[in-house]
Length: 78
Image (tube, rainbow, N blue to C red):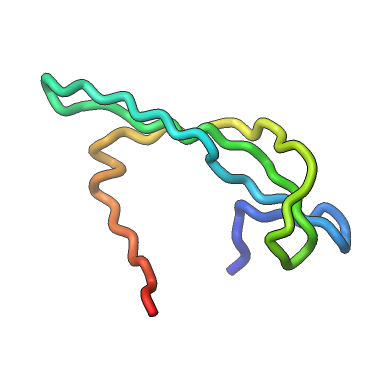
């Protein structure tokens, strides 16, 4: 399954959408809030992690705290 965050730009270059800025809005009185992932598109040499150039804004994703806390993520370890 291809990664939706990564796009081929040309045979030598691909772009990847990452969230270099994450904003947590939390109301401690009722434990509600949201997390905003402020995304940017970074460019790199195809198949490597050699990033170059300035990132471009790529929108954002807002997720409520209850939705985010209901998710689990498996982190592979050696």
